[in-house]
Image (cartoon, rainbow, N blue to C red; front, side, top):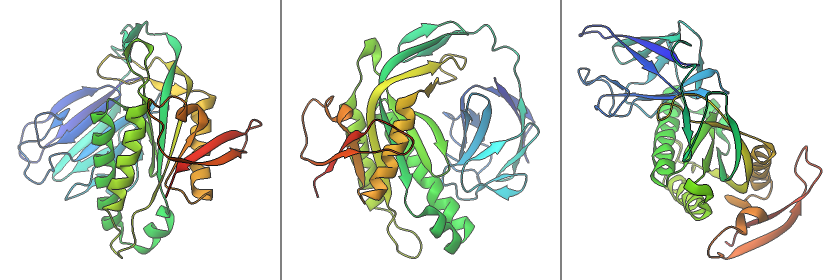
Length: 300
């Protein structure tokens, strides 16, 4: 699965960009779609990612002037249908699916190369981060302000995860799933744990327009996942599947139930090079799971 973007600038010649799993739109040259001729475009304006192997989403990154799909402002990730019109400031971008040219490509994932039909397993550190009370807040705050705050949050969390060599696998509403899978089979759980702590600090520095704090719940887990082949090296990321992915999302729900900002499974805690001060919440029964999971949280 691939895609093309037909860009129709207001004051420049039209052009076309073929994208893989991830594409960025912005004013600076490091973006996949560089709109440096358009001063109304933010430096990091929007992100397009492939989700669930075939669906593309567009995400605003806290831009000044917003991102629009079919003239509706993007607040949370919006699925793009073929032919969708994305407006970035005064530039119109048409999204078109394009399967050609990807069938025979090899994919590189976490240091290993497989064929275009390859699927393999490996251990990873997993992180889920979700904003608490987002639905309630989105009902009471103007959409433009919600879009700005949420977009800035997506931009900052994306940059943070990437700076610690993590990969964001997907965005689901206001939540994100990220993983760390180092080369040669090593997994940096310390990096994932440090990222979780930095996410908590980032959230503590943010507030909604009514001055309510921006609160998040973060869950960490460790285990083996299946990487499915998604396409071109450096242009596409593998998507991860497996029971441990379901488990980390269930752990995030436990974080909310326990009113904790961060929880981690025993499997994850055992992988840390230095044991932090943790509070033992004992074995927790996760929704839809028959095996209980021992859960820890930070001491407060």
